Length: 392
Ligand code: G3I
Image 1 (cartoon, rainbow, N blue to C red):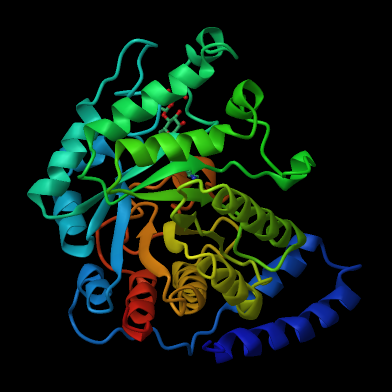
Image 2 (spheres, protein in one colour; image 1 turned 90 degrees about the horizontal axis):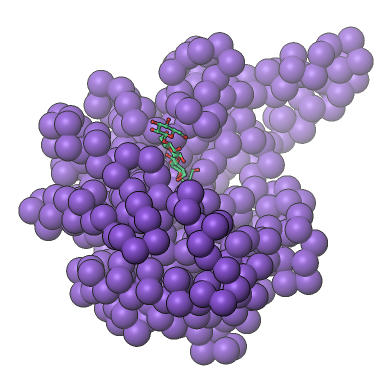
């Protein structure tokens, strides 16, 4: 396991700074203290040189890995430069919206009796035309449910609604899908359930077995697709993330013990720029524990929230790049990790602009390519991590 020297040096620096600052925090506001702490994360001397001209797709393939990204149908349809950049850099495409039950625009499930595959089919064709793998996100989730769901689905028909959705949607792309996020974000330790399951409409309507049902129907419908359980908040050395890692491992063990066909864990990896509680040893142990169950691992939604970072883009880009490279150095050391996808490719199109915007109004910078499709240090960080990864 590569002990990233910088992580230990940086933590020592922060520990010292933290002690110093804690003596002075009485006189300074918390935000001042935090900004000192975050500034200390920036190492202007850190080398982010990426050797050669190869794309991220090519660097990943050279190690038997896959790199790709999520993309939105309207963006790919209308932005040829972005589409070309995507095809150059990515080996796999996942629709950010098109295979969810309902996102405003061209929803997959406009009403209980209708499936509208316009978006998902166009994206599938784009992938095929450009020799990209295609992955599905997500068959069962508590968010992005259609407006009609709560008035239509009840404990009598819920299983039939769920099975029909999976059979219809996974069936349409059977044999063409690299992998499916079959169930997304089913764990919420704050709910204090013994099984740590999130209180979703699916849990309330069908009980905990909704997860098993979803995986079994998906496996019957598309035996070729890798079936993934996908979740977030698994990254840091915080009580919440530690509890969630433990709960996710227990869920996977439960599913495996029942013969439920879960084949991989999707780790979303929405990293937090400025978060200093990163413990590479604990994180590596988690990856090993998942792999020891015979599961593959995909990094499914990698990006870095930069809302708490300094406005200065040189500093911000270095901290974002360091977060990415430190995280991927641990993740890619685990041979069970088969793919890395960022949640978007360019700062031009990212959920973080809407959901985690900066209080100073500056555009967010979470992804490998900037808004002008130029590679940033984040691109270098991913390239370096792929180049350093053990070959699969
Ligand atoms: O564009 C419409 C707008 O016209 C309309 O007025 C408005 C009304 O709510 O909705 C707008 O669409 C929103 C869309 O993002 C574009 O901003 C949807 O409401 C909103 O639900 C949608 O959010 C997406 C979210 O998942 C829910 O589906 C994000 O784009 C997407 O990046 C996010 O992705 C999730 C993954 O699926 C799971 N992991 C976490 C990740 C980030 O939240």
